[in-house]
Image (cartoon, rainbow, N blue to C red; front, side, top):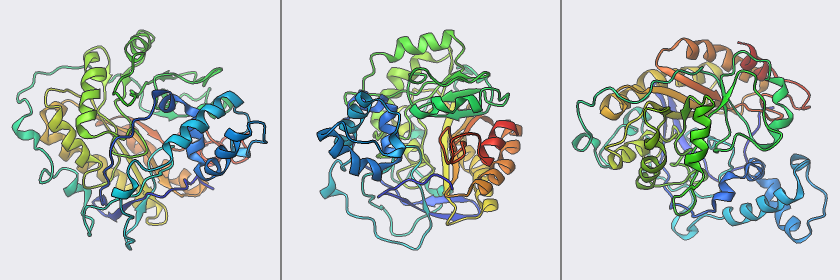
Length: 413
């Protein structure tokens, strides 16, 4: 069975032949400590948010109690710190200002990434419109056409690494041995600048790709030196903020995202391939609509890679439709956005996360079997990471003693 998130926020989407559409959500940035962002143990708690919500209050009062199965093996000191962070970040920033989502008959998309959603969505429209239209619309956002530089000289650093990446978190160190011998995995990432907790994930062919994370003051004092070290060791690219359009990920405004990009990503232009903030495939003010606003605030920025995520729910589409939605997004929707913005004129696409949420292991394997050869052969795709990952029930089988069927496809194909 595929891993499912317990969540109170679902982006309402309408799956059509041209792709996926959705109502937008927008939230104020929550000023969380950087130590919370960088703690992959926190990510584990949020992947099993219902368990954590019941467990953490009791554990913080009585640390010696037995650990739930999903948290077994985590050192008590790290679990205490993560539970403290979880308690601080579990509530919406401003519940009174975020009315509950009105139920609709439209399909829904699961939250994109390991962090379970905790805020309430506020739809901006009563009827979803296609991402093809809403993602590139400028009717509700500053248009970059009047501020973006024109005739930019060719610059930056073209991505030269392999395509297939592998996402992981704190527990993945137990399972990396199953991918160590894969000749297909070119890099790994874990949503932070630290490669992994000791003893760490070991990928024979892979290098680590860092992702900028900032504290409530939009700072990360260790980023620059860490990235310089990674570049010297062969890192081919760096990722900007992870899902700033998602209240349960980076959770930044377009203006804040632009500030982070200018301060932490842009300075490495020409030294390593630099990627845009990774956005969801939601509609309205999220997804490419968010990136539209971001570009309006970052007119003097440059991008070697546009980083996008794509999730659809198995309850709304079958495998063939999910595959078609990804292909349409990569060949039509994202290129239409790129064509509008000179800053992206040389950019390739990174499908930084993608998955058919709620698929069975067999369906996940079928999904990957159809998509991976296509992604590998598409010259406009620089890289991709399927969000099955190094966790039991994803690319690791439920017993935790080998690869699942989808994991075997990702390892071999």
